[in-house]
Amino acid sequence: MWIFDNEIDHISGEFENGDIIEVHDFDDYFMGYGFINVNSKIRIRMMSRRKEHPVTEELIEKRVRAAWEYRDNPAPAHRHCDEARRLSHPL
Image (cartoon, rainbow, N blue to C red; front, side, top):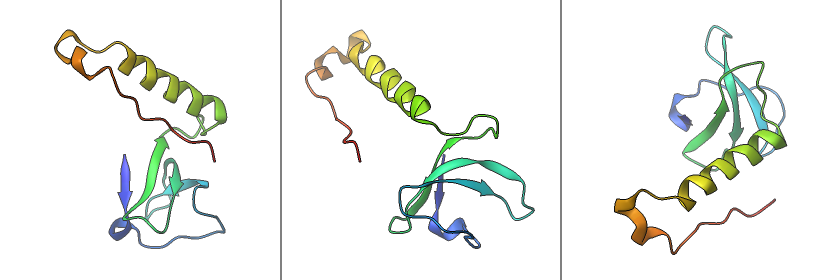
């Protein structure tokens, strides 16, 4: 889930771009955790919607591994697409 810059009323607390933050709605209801970047139209990229599942290094590794494995076994109709991969760069 993405949260665009025009969907945000205010941001409180201190952070740096790329930090994982808690997201709350206008009634202070917890919505999840996400990465924030104030230089992007997509201001927050949500990673977890459950308070009991914060974003950890293990969660990120699990998601990247699952994405890699999904792309490593393309459906028969997409076998011609197996020659390229997009790599993520560690910060």
